[in-house]
Image (cartoon, rainbow, N blue to C red; front, side, top):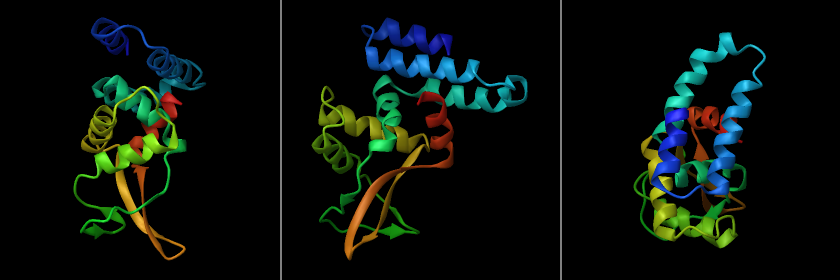
Length: 151
Protein backbone atom coordinates (compact mmCIF):
# COMPACT_ATOMS: atom_id res chain seq x y z
CA UNK A 1 0.00 0.00 0.00
CA UNK A 2 2.82 2.32 0.91
CA UNK A 3 4.56 1.65 -2.40
CA UNK A 4 1.30 2.31 -4.28
CA UNK A 5 0.91 5.64 -2.51
CA UNK A 6 4.50 6.62 -3.34
CA UNK A 7 4.06 5.49 -6.97
CA UNK A 8 0.91 7.54 -7.44
CA UNK A 9 2.40 10.63 -5.84
CA UNK A 10 5.60 10.34 -7.91
CA UNK A 11 3.82 9.77 -11.23
CA UNK A 12 1.38 12.65 -11.05
CA UNK A 13 0.24 15.51 -8.87
CA UNK A 14 -1.83 14.50 -5.87
CA UNK A 15 -5.45 14.13 -6.90
CA UNK A 16 -8.15 14.43 -4.22
CA UNK A 17 -10.18 11.54 -5.65
CA UNK A 18 -7.20 9.19 -5.78
CA UNK A 19 -6.02 10.16 -2.31
CA UNK A 20 -9.59 9.59 -1.08
CA UNK A 21 -9.54 6.04 -2.50
CA UNK A 22 -6.23 5.28 -0.78
CA UNK A 23 -7.44 6.84 2.48
CA UNK A 24 -10.52 4.61 2.35
CA UNK A 25 -8.30 1.53 1.92
CA UNK A 26 -6.20 2.46 4.95
CA UNK A 27 -9.31 3.25 7.03
CA UNK A 28 -11.03 -0.01 6.08
CA UNK A 29 -7.95 -2.08 6.88
CA UNK A 30 -7.29 -0.37 10.20
CA UNK A 31 -10.96 -0.65 11.27
CA UNK A 32 -10.97 -4.45 10.89
CA UNK A 33 -11.56 -5.80 14.40
CA UNK A 34 -9.87 -9.10 13.58
CA UNK A 35 -7.06 -7.97 11.29
CA UNK A 36 -4.85 -10.94 12.16
CA UNK A 37 -7.46 -13.40 10.92
CA UNK A 38 -8.29 -11.41 7.78
CA UNK A 39 -4.78 -10.18 6.93
CA UNK A 40 -3.99 -12.94 4.43
CA UNK A 41 -7.11 -12.10 2.41
CA UNK A 42 -6.46 -8.37 2.66
CA UNK A 43 -2.88 -8.86 1.49
CA UNK A 44 -4.17 -10.48 -1.71
CA UNK A 45 -6.65 -7.66 -2.23
CA UNK A 46 -3.96 -5.05 -1.55
CA UNK A 47 -1.77 -6.63 -4.21
CA UNK A 48 -4.68 -6.33 -6.67
CA UNK A 49 -5.06 -2.66 -5.76
CA UNK A 50 -1.32 -2.10 -6.22
CA UNK A 51 -1.60 -3.27 -9.85
CA UNK A 52 -4.31 -0.74 -10.75
CA UNK A 53 -3.86 2.71 -12.23
CA UNK A 54 -5.38 5.71 -10.42
CA UNK A 55 -8.07 5.94 -13.15
CA UNK A 56 -9.04 2.28 -12.71
CA UNK A 57 -9.31 2.79 -8.94
CA UNK A 58 -11.60 5.78 -9.45
CA UNK A 59 -13.82 3.88 -11.89
CA UNK A 60 -14.01 0.95 -9.50
CA UNK A 61 -14.85 3.18 -6.55
CA UNK A 62 -17.97 4.41 -8.37
CA UNK A 63 -19.28 0.90 -9.13
CA UNK A 64 -22.54 1.57 -7.33
CA UNK A 65 -23.33 4.23 -9.95
CA UNK A 66 -22.54 2.20 -13.09
CA UNK A 67 -25.63 2.43 -15.30
CA UNK A 68 -27.66 -0.23 -17.06
CA UNK A 69 -27.41 0.71 -20.75
CA UNK A 70 -29.06 -0.28 -23.96
CA UNK A 71 -26.99 -2.99 -25.65
CA UNK A 72 -24.74 -1.80 -28.49
CA UNK A 73 -26.04 -2.15 -32.06
CA UNK A 74 -23.40 -4.60 -33.15
CA UNK A 75 -23.12 -8.32 -33.54
CA UNK A 76 -21.90 -9.84 -30.30
CA UNK A 77 -21.62 -13.19 -28.62
CA UNK A 78 -23.04 -13.59 -25.15
CA UNK A 79 -22.27 -16.68 -23.12
CA UNK A 80 -23.87 -17.17 -19.73
CA UNK A 81 -24.91 -13.54 -19.54
CA UNK A 82 -21.39 -12.27 -20.26
CA UNK A 83 -20.84 -10.28 -23.45
CA UNK A 84 -17.61 -11.27 -25.18
CA UNK A 85 -15.31 -8.87 -26.97
CA UNK A 86 -14.03 -5.42 -26.19
CA UNK A 87 -16.91 -3.22 -25.05
CA UNK A 88 -14.82 -0.83 -22.99
CA UNK A 89 -15.31 2.21 -25.23
CA UNK A 90 -19.09 1.66 -25.35
CA UNK A 91 -19.23 1.30 -21.56
CA UNK A 92 -17.00 4.39 -21.17
CA UNK A 93 -19.37 6.43 -23.34
CA UNK A 94 -22.31 5.33 -21.18
CA UNK A 95 -20.46 6.29 -18.00
CA UNK A 96 -19.63 9.72 -19.43
CA UNK A 97 -23.25 10.31 -20.43
CA UNK A 98 -24.40 9.73 -16.85
CA UNK A 99 -22.11 12.50 -15.57
CA UNK A 100 -20.34 10.20 -13.09
CA UNK A 101 -16.96 11.23 -14.50
CA UNK A 102 -16.27 14.77 -15.62
CA UNK A 103 -12.49 15.08 -15.80
CA UNK A 104 -11.64 11.84 -17.61
CA UNK A 105 -11.49 11.48 -21.39
CA UNK A 106 -13.39 8.66 -23.08
CA UNK A 107 -10.06 7.09 -24.05
CA UNK A 108 -8.74 7.10 -20.46
CA UNK A 109 -12.05 5.83 -19.15
CA UNK A 110 -12.14 3.04 -21.74
CA UNK A 111 -8.58 2.03 -20.86
CA UNK A 112 -9.45 1.97 -17.15
CA UNK A 113 -12.44 -0.30 -17.82
CA UNK A 114 -10.30 -2.58 -19.97
CA UNK A 115 -7.69 -2.67 -17.20
CA UNK A 116 -10.34 -3.73 -14.67
CA UNK A 117 -11.58 -6.44 -17.02
CA UNK A 118 -8.08 -7.76 -17.82
CA UNK A 119 -7.34 -7.98 -14.09
CA UNK A 120 -10.52 -10.00 -13.58
CA UNK A 121 -12.34 -7.39 -11.53
CA UNK A 122 -15.34 -6.78 -13.82
CA UNK A 123 -17.07 -7.90 -17.01
CA UNK A 124 -19.83 -6.71 -19.33
CA UNK A 125 -23.06 -8.43 -18.32
CA UNK A 126 -25.83 -8.77 -20.88
CA UNK A 127 -29.51 -9.40 -20.38
CA UNK A 128 -33.06 -8.29 -21.09
CA UNK A 129 -35.09 -5.70 -19.18
CA UNK A 130 -38.67 -4.94 -20.26
CA UNK A 131 -38.03 -6.69 -23.58
CA UNK A 132 -34.93 -4.60 -24.36
CA UNK A 133 -31.39 -5.95 -24.62
CA UNK A 134 -29.21 -4.22 -22.03
CA UNK A 135 -25.64 -4.34 -20.73
CA UNK A 136 -23.98 -3.28 -17.52
CA UNK A 137 -20.41 -3.46 -16.34
CA UNK A 138 -20.51 -5.80 -13.34
CA UNK A 139 -18.03 -6.72 -10.63
CA UNK A 140 -16.59 -10.22 -10.30
CA UNK A 141 -16.16 -11.72 -6.82
CA UNK A 142 -12.56 -10.44 -6.81
CA UNK A 143 -13.81 -7.01 -7.88
CA UNK A 144 -16.27 -7.00 -4.99
CA UNK A 145 -13.44 -7.70 -2.54
CA UNK A 146 -11.39 -4.80 -3.90
CA UNK A 147 -14.46 -2.55 -3.91
CA UNK A 148 -15.06 -3.27 -0.19
CA UNK A 149 -11.65 -1.86 0.64
CA UNK A 150 -11.81 1.26 -1.55
CA UNK A 151 -15.37 2.41 -0.87
